[in-house]
Length: 336
Image 1: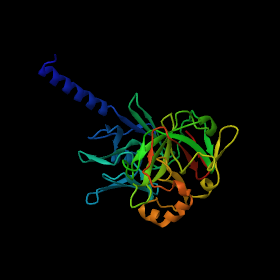
Image 2: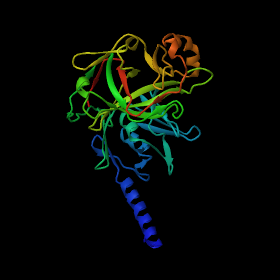
Image 3: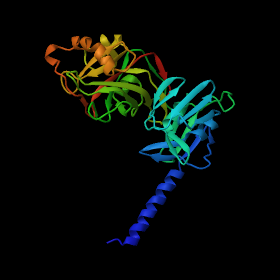
Image 4: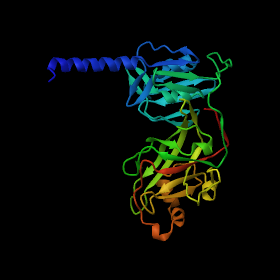
């Protein structure tokens, strides 16, 4: 048996190990180390969180803190970034970005997920878990001069409008358990047909969600934010949800998917709780998420897309491993 003293010693050793591990996380920008005067980068709920002021100022940004609004604002090279404590939604030049974990205050320092720091101002980032190193690379240095970055080991990938990337979701999603802003990941399938390197992941978030209520079906609206490449870099993506069935995509002799019919016509598609727990995909030309107001506006149109025998409302549940399609909205060139 272990004595009480030994138990206490083991607990202390564990705490010291955790503290040392957190202190070992390092960040550099364009090859120069970022200095953190007090609070260090650390792992919180599985996310590497980094003090935002130190990194943004190293990039040459002007950083302001509004105590009453609990917001951080950074300005650099004509771009403005706004973060609010406890809010998973940030803005970059007025465009919404979703964070995998909301900004948090630790000893009067605001910490944000490393991935947001990497791409908020158009930078690339590489995370090396073995060395606990976050490397952020920009095409400009702190004074705005162009710099040359090393060539990437992976080739550029060209994706055309209406190309469809098949993915499998890495976690279950349901209209009874999830909430707006919840993040998820998916693994790219058939990478040889898209040109994306094996191991590429897609990050997304729940844009709107509504459980079944008042005779109306459940609704799940998914948005896609970025592609994470196996070399640690991350790129934003402009994409929309699509089904992989033959009504929505064609598949050529090489296995490449292309959107067709409604999937190529509508701006986006949402999952509606008709016809079983997997639901039906319905197209919409609305830019807004399919919340309860939008659902009320479009319920008759939605029902017209669903056979009468399948119009019994149900809750939605997408199990881990569910296959979905991600339609590219505009011609895109990605350099992993």
